[in-house]
Length: 436
Image (cartoon, rainbow, N blue to C red; front, side, top):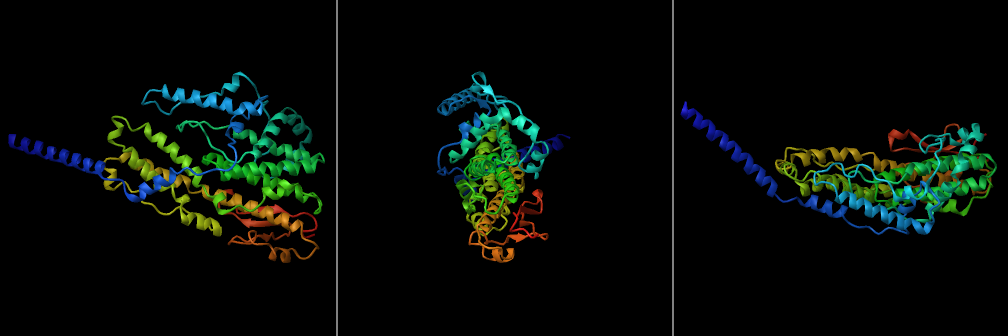
């Protein structure tokens, strides 16, 4: 009996020692080179053009703030948020639960408004025309907001100055959608030049968010905003004479996007900073026994850094669908013995980002489609549309997605890559270009 107990104790001791040994080896095993390179790539600071739009966006929902007060108010908010984070217990999760700008106590919030149009739903012009009186009444109290939205195009990039936190603070992006029915109403009321000016100006803002942002949320909002404004611009142009003059801003807004503008590299850097902040909440005792912060960051970096690589940029340049390379997320690896929680978290992270690059590619394709429409409007004569399309300049005709005429001859089309958004991108043709 005693001999059997002794064997049992020795066996259990051996198992425990073996587990401890494997854990120790796993914890001491160095991070692999690919993970180190991915972390370095995501921690690079890339220069951004122009001024930061964040203060203007952050305070978009308050009337009466002078432009020269925006940065000071934002600085107050950033300092207060950092103080709130510093005051949290070390094991607090998920960070600061609620935060209100100091502007809320000093300025009037913008009036509420019914949502008549959205960027992802077609038919804004038709909806506004059917309910013109109610739309006009709703927009009466929004003029100051609409002016602030228009001024966003003066900035060059978006960078969130708040400390990375799992409860990351975001501006009231939803207010940007109120400009869409305003532009539609301007056209319905005969102010078409104003509508075109507004749509193209907002497209510049959308491109800023899409291409020069440290936030994946902001980039996706920029892509949706590009498509919403491009669709409404196409509907407006379809109702105007082919010779109707365009504001200069339209030719700047619909220059085809370069590959670097459609990459989600910079937004993924912002996502990585947020992930790193979230991991920090799990690195104390006893969670630290089951999660290695640096190795988890390395594994997650492998899932996030690929949009910054040469293969992704080459695919964008050729307008091929950007796909994430296969990266092993198996938890049956030595490094996972001392980092099981980190290996689970990193396995979840990868698939979540698969569709986002395609959304930016489709937004870029929509820009190219409208740019082709603008080029066609300027061509002399009334020759066959297919003949004109065959003469599209480089930059508009390149890539595997060829611009084509729809079967009914009433619109231009391009295939989508993001299948969740539908099969094709389309803009209507104005009279003189559309088939009768």
